[in-house]
Length: 186
Image (cartoon, rainbow, N blue to C red; front, top):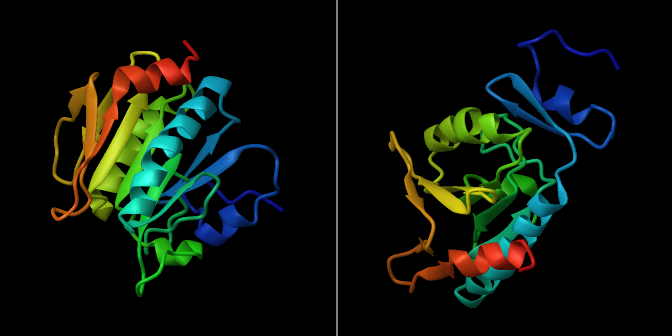
């Protein structure tokens, strides 16, 4: 298949790319290409899933998933967040990518090759799309940036991460020093 000219990528043209080990995303017509992540990145995503998933299941919030994914945020984009929570649809958990709509939570674990896109390109899109909470996890600095729509600067934390998808639920509390120790197998 020929490659579309820069700036003319569509969701269908990205989905038609051959499987080559890269992760392809489309944000506002810009193709984002990421190589396979490092092991620490995968450990960070896996540990985050272990912490978020029980909370989401217990409180019947929706479903926790991770990349690869083909989310479009109801806008013809193609996004593959490292971890995301899709809200329940018609009293059941979402199953198909189209049912995920705008996730309740998106988390990206930084890698050297993706840091700029996670902090700038994708962050701006997630905010514009109305993602209520976006976490940018920096494993090397052992900190998390927390973004919401309308924020101009993040709240940064190194100690405790809270998420409360509904005011009627108790918050999920993540002890960040413990999380980072688990990721780095300390």
